[in-house]
Length: 191
Image 1 (cartoon, rainbow, N blue to C red):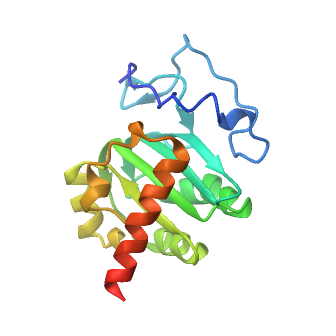
Image 2: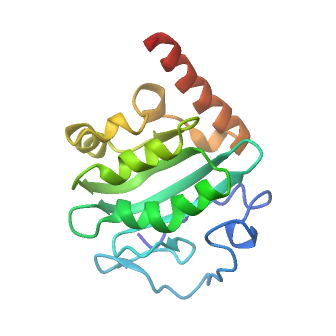
Image 3: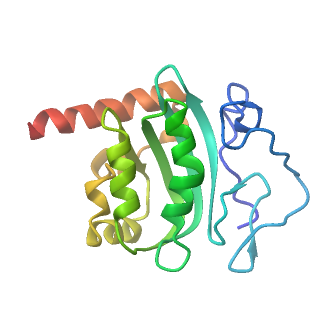
């Protein structure tokens, strides 16, 4: 796991630790000292600690003019024991919403498991972005099944093209536009 780095190709255009409006502003990272673990496996030091023992993330890009952010996740999303959604919502998402972010791209290919509790923080997040959306991109099949089993799919948009999206082939604005187009198309079909 220590070899899995957050995606870094967009670093020339955005770095969360240098963004004064980011919850991660001012963080200092080491390339050589590994301190965080997920179940005794060290993870790359570029991942951001959000206060969970099992879930870490990296803000890959934030665009305040368009109101979107791309967040890459790693680990186990565990609401049952760690209440990861509460930590994520209160400490990261709420701050981003206050800064005008209302569309969230969650990259989940490195989320290994999901353990649900209740859906109140998902509902709150969904309600906090009435003009926006939350897109779950490339989450593993068994994680998506758990989302569906616990009705998290009511709050997150995933499935179809979003499950196998080659997101690294896009720039951040292109990725946002592609996902926004998919969501708008789904909404048009369902109305």
